[in-house]
Length: 83
Image (cartoon, rainbow, N blue to C red; front, side, top):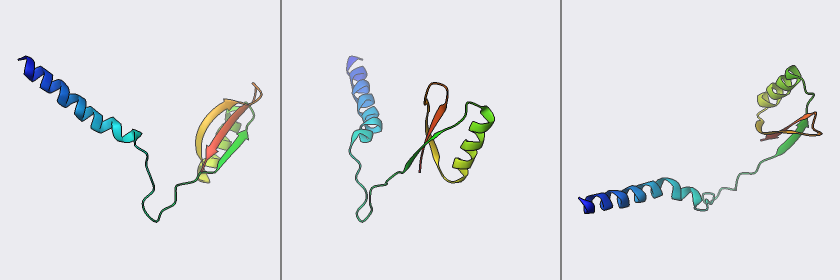
């Protein structure tokens, strides 16, 4: 029985390595393609839900993706977008 358990553990570890190890390998762009470049935009908005919702909808419609929400001067939300 012990060899079967050991074999199961080894196979399980190898299979789980197949899932998470490739994420650590450096990914290079395909031949003839450039690495993707992002543009970031930092926007301070009033601490009002409607104002924040308006800004989020405007930037989302323009193709910007929200990356982070932080506090600018501790009273004003700061939104970071990337495109």
